[in-house]
Amino acid sequence: MTFTLTSLGDTLCHNTQYWDAYNSKTDEYDFSYVYEDIKNYTLSSDITIGSLETTFAGKEKGYSNYPTFNTPDSLATALKDIGVDVVSLAGNHALDYGYTGLCRTIDVFNNIGLSHLGTYKTAEDQEKILIKDVKGVKIAFINYTYGTNGIPLPSGKEFCVNLIDKDFIKKQINQAKEQNVDMIVACMHWGTEYRTTANSEQKYLANFLFENGVDVILGNHPHVLEPMEKKTITLQDGTTKDVFVVYALGNFTADQRDEITRDSAILNLTITKNSDGKISIDKVNYVPIYMYKNTNVSTHKFKILDIEKTIKDYEEGKNTSINSTVYNNLKKQLEKIKSILGDELN
Image 1: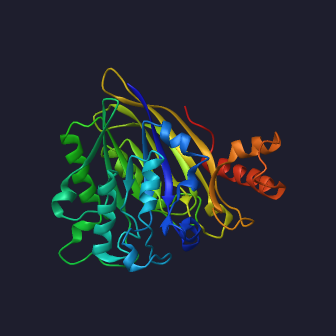
Image 2 (image 1 turned 135 degrees about the horizontal axis):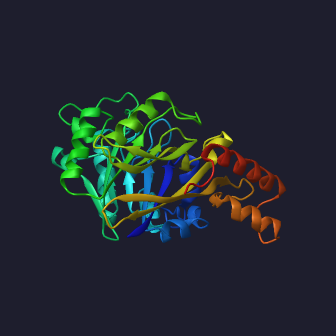
Image 3 (image 1 turned 60 degrees about the horizontal axis):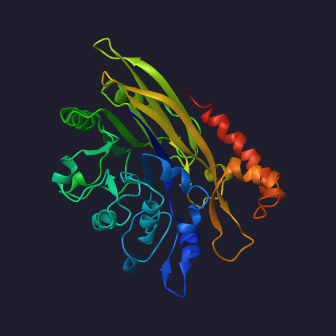
């Protein structure tokens, strides 16, 4: 059985983004226009994984951006509408609005039927491993963050955010194995911000995860792309298996100043469960994307561009929404993305 798994970078929402999505006539926020150019990739995948770097703490708290994020609920709906199936919530901004903000964020996803993991309202919820059935393949998802920006976990509610703790991770991996899953995907919030290479801690943790049973690691947090790697490892019992890590996928949406924070990729893994039950990672490819901000228009400034398609359309005279400056910049950003992620893997 073969299926595609798609992974996205971090979803951030700065004030410029939610101001841009605001409709004064309806007093509502609509982010759907941001994804028009790329949603065909996420909708066509068998399962798509997103990563949230904000909260949905509620309008009454006041929408806000860095250092404490609170975003209109409609952003969650926008993610579901483009085909996102699972959202990892354990990140350094999970407690930006405390335990109540964390709980309300969970409620927003529950209300629209979008699966999530990494943050929890109860200890019982934390005990449950998220498992998705994709074309008959049982996939367990686990999610951890290095920290919560110095905000301590609430006393008596330490269960609310999964922190990177090796003993706890091993426990959850074993829980997943006990449920006879076919593969385990770890969503890791880790790394050094704005660094385009993995640090030693990430590499150490990746090996730890692989050795303990994780098949695929989807990293995020640094706001920039970091390399990916596919390899075959030998387990303690002498058997071999395919494993894959992408250390970071950059920002899926954000409005940070540095150009490199606008570069990202839609990552696609083609995975097969073979007749012997083993998982093979057959192909890894990616769509280079860019968070474009058109300062020449008064509204709907933001759009995620499919870089290669945008370049091709401009060269063929089909795209009049960008100019030569943007075109030349996109070519430069494309080279940067490829220099970090490298070639597609088979």
